[in-house]
Length: 587
Image (cartoon, rainbow, N blue to C red; front, side, top):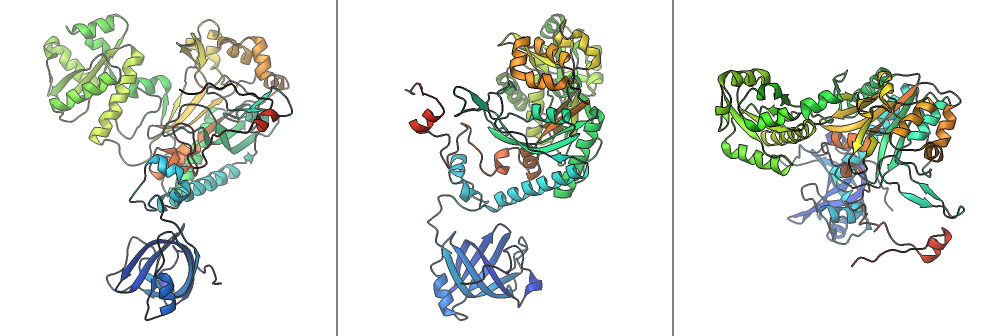
């Protein structure tokens, strides 16, 4: 039996020429040039070219004749320089090859159902069905390594700042946290259920009451919700909580964490402190609370100027309490492109989109005649437009912001406005509540344990719309990475907040009595965040699809095609947990 390896396949260089090396891995590619067989041998560290020459060793060459893609082999040989003109500058091992003296074929592979190559990518379902093969691809190995490096760097920073890594339970009491719970029946407590945690929220607050002071963990969070590229049924948070800290302390820590993380893993320098936008400012300027600051194209409110025009649509919306807002792509835009954007806006829910081209101190379009020269000049001055086109949406303020936010991103994609780099920001001062049209009641914007701003507490029961909270989100390149807040530490205030969302005192005791009771014994001021680890690593790897950095993700139906979960269970298993199925069959 051969020695498995003295080196990995990403290690040997021209400094190792004439050395004896033992390597092992998968046959990535096979080439036969005039009887000489070349194999690119692959492991997670890289690729090494190994050579089987019949003039050097006929027996070994004969063994290599039957090698195919994905066979696992171990080899021994001498490192030599590649012939002149045959080097590969893209590989660390590209200047050398190994002339093989010995070979052991350790496992033969059937023809793989997918290509183990980054140039040819199978469709999503096939990739997930054969995920164990998909993960062999160099890019996926690179992503797994990146995730590991990021986790180690984050732990290093948490530890340096005095945080304790503490695990919280995975079998918990079902509590309302926004999404549906995954529930687990109890065998020993008939008719009762655990829930899988949507977050460690309650437990990390209890740890602060316990005197832990600084806690963190890489927490598994499970939520039964509709899926998309940046959402999975189970995801990972860099979760933390700090005692005797205020909003500023938490924000400074998080900025330091990301600065350390990006420097350590990507050697990228992150600018701190991050820009801070209030929720209202972010919505007004960018139409979203997840602004991408890699480009400008800010939304401008031109309502007060628009009402001075003779354009009926604008005047009617403004006079009925709505807003007229616009953006200014500073580029020549042909009519065909404008019509395409109008179609995009309409499909996004707009009643229409008006436009005017900027020509010096004048505006030109089929509606320009309704705007007197003075009004046109005022529009140009307010928007700061020097060229290009003004695109207008007239609607309710929320609708106008939302539509122009989507149009802004669409224009950025079409005109390739997003710059390279990392643009972080904070979005703060969120409303504590939002009105749920379907339920016809107030619902928490984030969660019900968020502390209202002191000056807003008086509005809790009188006018919840006026209550703003000590909430703060981290956004990177248009993706929300983290959400955090200061926490309510007074039981009576917590009950007030619960009452606003329609929870009776009895319901509050049933669902959260253990937390309310704990706060009776005095808690320090505290707050914390759940930092989206999957999203962070995905962005660091150059994608927004978190499935690319999760080893075994689910598909859009929350299924795993590889192990075929979720699956059925036996009648005996159901009997053990006191459950009888009554499921309607699909027609």
